[in-house]
Image (cartoon, rainbow over the protein chains, first blue to last red):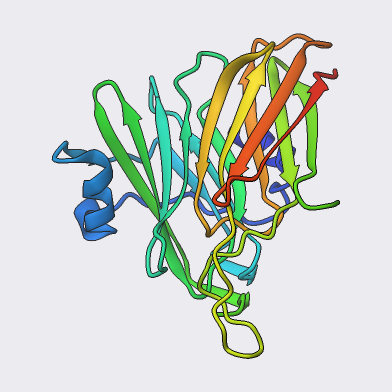
Length: 141
Length: 105
């Protein structure tokens, strides 16, 4: 199944989803949190991880996020967001053979933020990020 | 939906089964304040597990930034129509819940 079809299944097909751009230096984002997850293992920027978001989210209380990992042997996906009190949004163990390494959910943000997806494989960690540049109606502080 | 109620929908497209979960939960992040300026205590779902034929196939940890009444979509391969799909959840107060459905075509 193509990504486009999957996004339609998730009800995200009507929005202009933006493939993430690979970070030049993954260590710049969520440095401490990333290190707490991966330890001292190297983290490779990888555009086979796609984050599907709205660049300008309409409602900060319900911001749709979709992650698709085409990195072979994806065992875990971790979603992080910067600039908020709790950085880690979700973590899914995708090691079971039946589970496709994809996840979509909605998150609540108080301001624009960079979302980072970490993917664990037997050969190491991979990362990609995308930025939500603005929010419409934000949730209360 | 009352708090803790779980909605599970499955849809088969080609060889993939899409599992859409929606669980009624406040998902208070612990950073918001009420009208009196008092911080509303954190109350959020911390874990969701998905079982297929009573075998755990997905384990999802959640943080407080997931939106109220979490909606989560997963994709699975190799399911069979009519087999049981069960979802369990727990929150940071130790409240638990579960629901199950049969995979539909």
